[in-house]
Image 1 (cartoon, protein in one colour):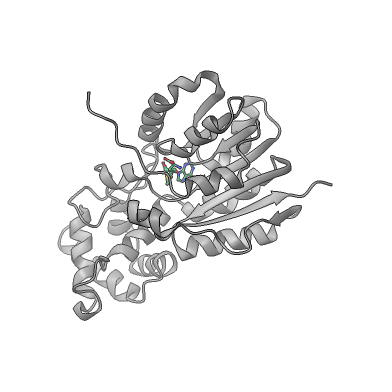
Image 2: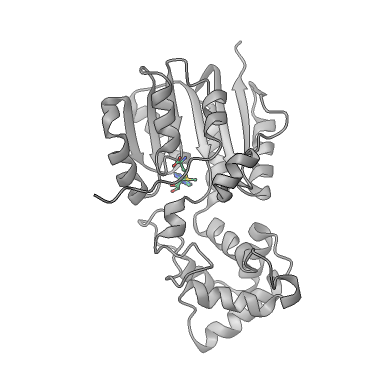
Length: 296
Ligand SMILES: C[S@@+](CC[C@H](N)C(=O)[O-])C[C@H]1O[C@@H](n2cnc3c(N)ncnc32)[C@H](O)[C@@H]1O
């Protein structure tokens, strides 16, 4: 039988320690993905329970198989993590001891035929939840030039945003933009070659990131999901968040700062060791921040 390849969990040891998962308790994994963090939480103490959430049905199916052996110690929900309150209500649980958010896309999104990658020819999709109607193809082909420019600038911090948007609009009048490589090529043609030639980072990465964030309402989800989780964290319970780019990290830092009744555990964000980055280069931009509910 072919061996299943999983998304390598990032900052795993650090997350488990900061969640205090060795003590028997109830946890929420708000971003189940391949199930690596959940598995480690369940292994940390035989009495731990995990309520896991993911908006991607394929991820859930795969993780279910991996986690079968834990029986009713795990409950899995196909939902957005902004719905964490409803999920806990369905479970009949008021408070949990730890919540983990491991944000961003998984290995499966990048490897699957889902339109997240700049490197391979795929349909322009980028939906994490395939029940959703809006795709990257709609965004690229239907939004106005100004809307596109604003999205690429705001969520990609791309200084060529205006030029990229103008070129997208010019090209889509000739023919709709249908695939990842068509979009990547347009961006490549707009950004001066001397700024990217010979580098490992593709010039369209920022544009792809921006469109992905918009399609999946990623920042709105974070803005709603973390405070909603905070409402259900017990005394001494923790929220641990792993981010993968500076915009996301800044957003989380600000949300943490404004949450009442919590103290920050990580004065500086925890980053992966050289060894982890060597084993899993995708972890290189990860930053972990944690807060703890102060007991009254
Ligand atoms: C980086 S992966 C998580 C990997 C996981 N920790 C592991 O060890 O395999 C992020 C996952 O979160 C899911 N996700 C992202 N945003 C979400 C949201 N707002 N609500 C629910 N799931 C979300 C994605 O579908 C993806 O499967």
